[in-house]
Amino acid sequence: MVQNMKKLVALLGDPVSHSLSPRMHNAGFEHLGIDMNYMAFRVPPEEVDSALKGLSSLGAVGTNITVPHKEKVFRLVDSMSVSARKSGAVNTVVFNGRKLEGHNTDIFGVKKVVSVMGPETDKAVVLGAGGAARAVVCALAEKGYSMITVYNRSISRSMSLKKDLENAYKDICIEVKPWGEIREQGKCLLVNATSLGLDANPWPNGMVEKIFLSSEVIALLDMVYSKNGKTALVQEASEKGIPSAGGEEVLLYQGVAAFETFTGKDAPVEIMRQALIQGVPVS
Image (cartoon, rainbow, N blue to C red; front, side):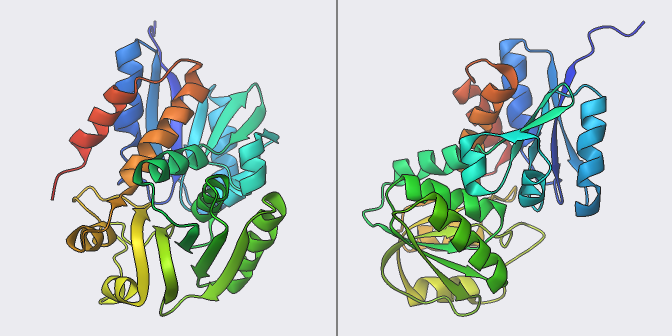
């Protein structure tokens, strides 16, 4: 007879091998004595719908969603929070019977990290236009940023982000520019919301240096984090004395919000932080 079966919480993405979410959430579950187990699953885009249905059938509590599935899952949930609806992206799903409830805890994470850095500007440059970028723009709009420039390879995707989020937030102006040589005038917060900088997806040679030379960056948030230490963007910012934060900080705070959504309990923030610190080496 099988006893003490733990309830499943999952992470769906592609890739997920780098993720520290299982370490962070499981540390929190163990600390509070919660019978849940967090596991990461690599799922290609064409299998996301099946994966969600499978988790629901298994009685899973919920799942986090990471690159590149956040916009697709937005279209698959049955209901969603206000933040998810505004962003057009879902990074947290709770299974309520057979119904899927979508949330976006990335927005909370980004707001917390930007508040800590506190750059004195209302201008931001966002690299990328996917689900992470949508959460970033929402967070910045709610923090009072009024001028946001989005650089992305797909102009149509950038224009979709611009239309959706300017409708959701009336006080922001989003300018769309093609990917290439990133050049901005005026003091700005730079946010990387692409997958560039992942250990398996490095920046093209010389591009990081060019970004800092051609733009007046006064603070940096890299949504990416690396198991091998600082990302290339964070390393460059550190060398230039520019305040910066890596994706592990956003990961912590979005994870705190997701943890509380899954469990209904206050997250043990410092326990989760220590689990992340132990997973990210100092470079």
